[in-house]
Length: 464
Image (cartoon, rainbow, N blue to C red; front, side, top):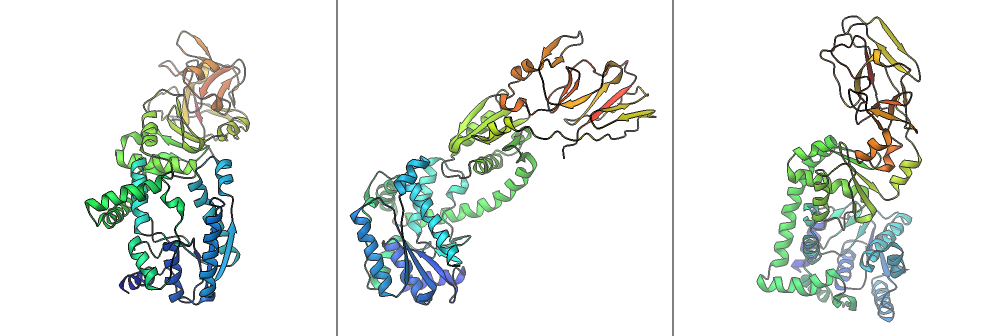
């Protein structure tokens, strides 16, 4: 049969499974999984196939019927069968997700566990062209990025999908060709599930418009997959440039200067990494994240999967709920201060020890002094006591004007919209209670360099 040969050719072309290889097959009893089992038993010896049937604990007597059907089918072809009974509704309630998603998660966990225990290198599942079309439309209406529109892959890690280029109608014909039957899950007709509404209402209407609709959607997904591969390379470059993965994920403000398409892909990748999944992350969330870059410091928004996003001074930080509390309880180790000799005419004296850093320059030149977020220069003669690197404490203040006006450090943090959970973890350079430098933010005016400065003090922080 041509359809059977097409599937076998795909298996061979993509090297999905070799003749002597072991494979685990997920089988529900529906047409798709029955077809998959029948194709694989033509290629492999029965002892190389392990079938796994999952009873989801949802449909009562009907589930028992499905189980009995699968048992008889596997006995007929002498294929070893593992049966697992799972409480999908309970898992869905505990994790506050839909039963549909809970079933999918538990199925794959079970497949992985059995495959690992039995040293089976491949897991075959029965996704087909219609599944790709349904997933494409579902992700499209959810506002997915390009990745969500690239279709279901023929293989991903140990998962193989030999039927992914075959339509559902062809699959049913193949089962009949083998002289076998299949069972129909009554929940497939229920419109409670979003996928079923697309399967039973949207797809049939699209097929009325063009009978090749499913095929064309698959072709579009394949083209988007190739586009996504190119875009992924560009995203990699910009991600490395603008994103750091410490204390959650921090995206630097400079990313707003790059192309919108690549920027949004970086945002999607960052959100997905923090969330641990991408299923419910859509274009609306990407837009909210993008808009946050143009809001005041201190603003925050909530995202799916307990992700919180904070606007900070130099960008945006993404943290999974619970992480922020941990950050405030456990202060990071302070960086080590390393003194770097900078030749400005002649240096006559350098003084440094473990807790202080003081560089004294007799020359008063203030030309070409390099500064950045980790290097600052001060007028040494305006500093009356030792300079310490520490965290904030009660009584700290900044001098904020040439006239000596003071502002409490706490009020500065509040006015600057710096999240409260971050404040105890921001290092400061202090001279007693006067804060010369809030590291990563601003310096005070108390030791500011002027045209009359004679002795320069350089402070450089190098994070290890």
